[in-house]
Image (cartoon, rainbow, N blue to C red; front, side):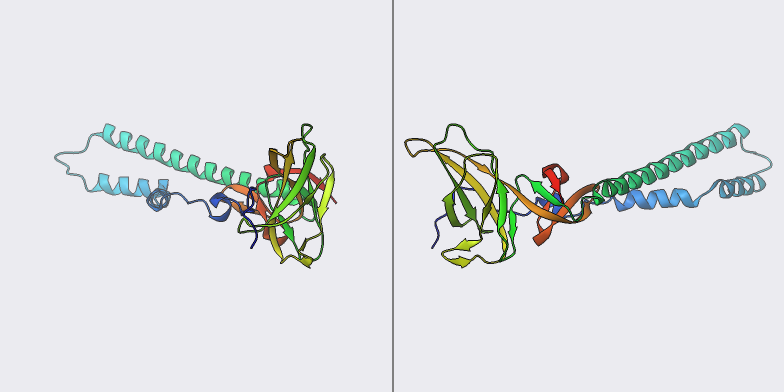
Length: 231
């Protein structure tokens, strides 16, 4: 049985990437629909009917009709403003998707994200390095946070690889966390860092109003996690 690793386990994004943002309250939407259904022509029809059916001996004050007209006009304008804001928000959301659509098919270097191992191809990663360390190791943990591999690594910001082997056999397909651990001259742990990993952008999707990326293997992340793009 493998020992528990001191590193972070590969996890999928937070609920902001797995759950859609809630829409506006239904009551508010129904209210807007009701207001929109009463257009200016309908209001004039109702006003005319009110004038025709008023008590001749006790007619309504004309200023009251003017006030009603002004009030309706104000409400109508507010509804139109809300509709324009909704359309503008939808346009901005669409623009957010288009902004990252050119990333599809490109290899992304990402931070704080697990790497996907397809069962055959080596996993590439990059660490920053630690100038105070005399030794560095790479630790691989599976989706359950269990350490499956540990091996010496270069102490510097160069691209390195894990061959995907565990005890002489290929590891199962899936996502794995890649972490660097640094040791001092006395063998004590100085520091650790989650390595940058690489993956191909497969899709751009929306979580509510926020775009997120899907890499090969289903790894999901936000665009601000991307530190570089390549062919």
